[in-house]
Length: 134
Length: 192
Image (cartoon, rainbow over all chains, first blue to last red; front, side, top):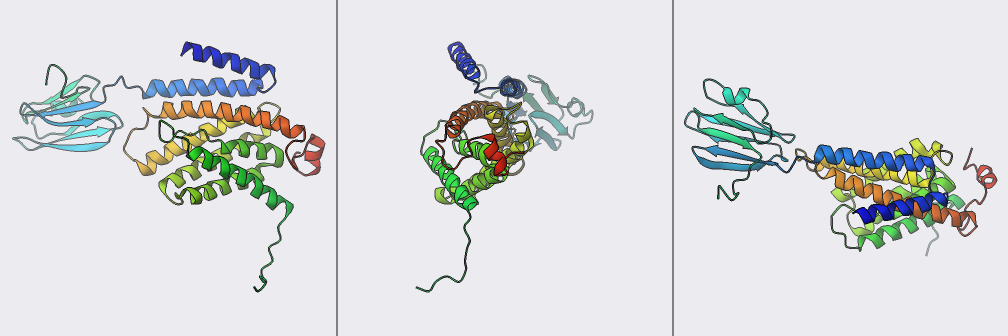
């Protein structure tokens, strides 16, 4: 990678000395590279792009944060509605009395929402089959 | 055989558009057979032709050449009116609009490389938007975007450098019927 960028630097300098590149071109190239890096920074979610939903002590569903969807999880009280949207997850509706898991809102990476009366839990950023859970 | 009653007057300009569009289609077909590791990332060699036509013969000619290239290339590759064609067309339109916007900066502030990189970003940006809004709504493309943008940066740079090199050849009279001097360009109404 380092060798590559050095080689690229040499090539660009050579191009500039041949008047193949003006300063406007250099500006566009630098800004373009910065834009790519900014988008890469925003896009990198740290790899925690999984959602794990448990119901009554068992894995009910495992989903990706990248696909928007609504998941209905049936429990003893009724249906808990889990919403995945724009790379985030929350419990949108729950039949429980206190609504704690709903009021928790969008989950941070690694966070878990518990809807105890309905025996549902939603965990962001975990896989069902890691070495401990398998 | 009866002679056709429809007379199509072919102007010098039409021949030129056809010639350059044919060159661009050739490059499109050639790069279609190159196996590439990631679908959707292509060198976009045909854009070299668009860039050259832009600075030699003006924006209208460049638009003709690249839109003809998109349609003819799609017909030959068999993906006319498929999603791939829509992606190709949207990217090309975005590039052409970008070139129209930044063209006045050439050659004082921006060279062919700058124009090429800007057009490449517009191309990829429009395609990502079409995929996001139409082809795969609800799927977050953000993790993939940097890959495509980085590819656009590299291909834009390389294509721009090739175009600069070819333009130097054109200035030495090695490109047929290209204006050699700025005076000639002004005379043909290609430069202010």
